[in-house]
Image (cartoon, rainbow, N blue to C red; front, side):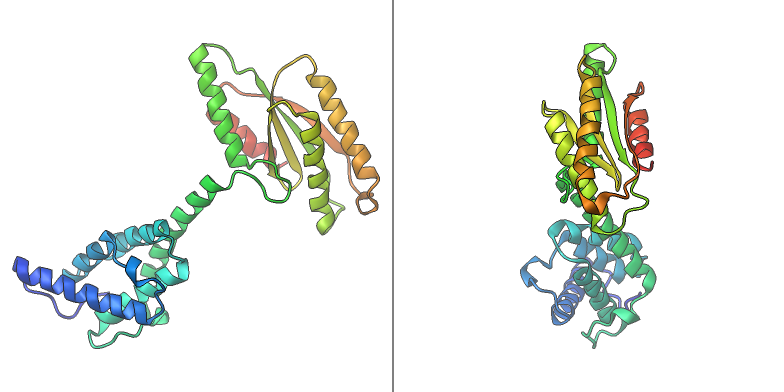
Length: 268
């Protein structure tokens, strides 16, 4: 992507060229469907224009713009159409029609990846519960583990928690019945572990409880297994379920190792 007419090298000429390119890009983007003209201008837009005017590589400025667009709430399609509008005015200053198919795929890909990186981080920060079961996500569990390890380090003592996993063999179950089994498992765990423990869903068939080691833990684990077996047995759609396995896992010495353990347990 290169501009055919470079602006003057004087400060005044460079500023005029930047304003002209920015204005043409904005018109082309709005014509292509940019929904909110008032939020189009960003500092990253000027950085892209400045790079284009000196025929520099636009990869990094466009990646920065993609991240800024995501942070401002612009959608991916809108963001990529905006890049296509830029390509249109740079290719021929007389044109204002954006054509995403004519835009270099490398620049579209870099912009899209930068946009997606920010959007994924935003989702991870905002979503702390799995919508169907109501259990916390694995990401939130890792956060809780970090808090526990930091407190143990501050107090100069070992971590006093364990992970209790409930795994259900769903290999012979299909469709919504698989989801219903985990909904029932979540309900049972909330009843048995109702004292502020952290409950999370690690995978399609694995739930976990982060709880302190205490004298009644073995009994509560057995109660959870028995209650869940009873709940599942009365559902005619779940008669082909495999065994229910409840296990206790010691936490390793460090938070990093604990996160690795969480990842491993979620794949079982």
